[in-house]
Image 1 (tube, protein in one colour):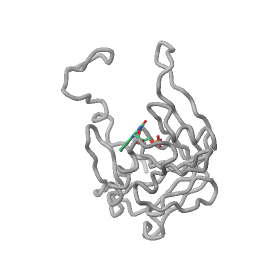
Image 2 (cartoon, rainbow, N blue to C red):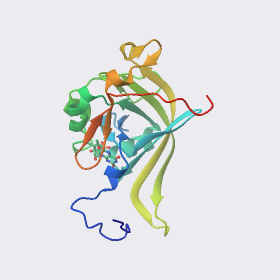
Image 3 (cartoon, rainbow, N blue to C red):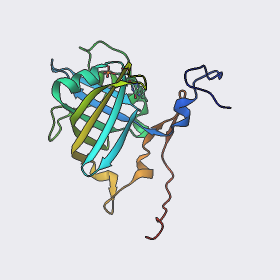
Length: 199
Ligand SMILES: Cc1cc2nc3c(=O)[nH]c(=O)nc-3n(C[C@H](O)[C@H](O)[C@H](O)COP(=O)(O)O)c2cc1C
């Protein structure tokens, strides 16, 4: 099949997110201008470079996370592992901005080293970020979209000591969670290595 995206795909559910999968989940913690702690998952999220390390996430709508980044210039991307699936999901509830999703999700805010936003204490790793850009996206015709892209530079990295073995992150043991399409997720628990040509 083939479909043009300005027409209906003809399938019972939109296949797009199932085709760009797996996607990492940035479990993003911020603090509001009013001091309320905020936490929400974003799977339109990824690393886009490592010299210096940079990340992006995108919000459909001007959500609290984006407003907080705009206000403070800072955020933390917490690693979601399989054991934290339910907490991550609970933190995606649409609640008023005076409610902290840390409480809803039952996770512990722990002070970050370099940014005002706390990290999730239960998460095995966290990227402390400073915002480089918060921009409203436009389509190919130049129309403004209800879509906001945040680019951040990672200024500090927390890794739990027990997530490391022989100086390497134990990816398969940690079981990082990935978002697929529909209501589906996958945990990364099988890893293999490939040498690049010529190396
Ligand atoms: C696994 C998962 C991934 C999500 N990814 C996104 C995303 O990439 N962009 C987005 O706008 N919302 C996404 N959501 C929905 C937000 O988490 C949800 O709207 C949340 O309430 C936003 O919180 P905030 O207003 O505190 O930022 C996702 C939800 C889940 C469960």
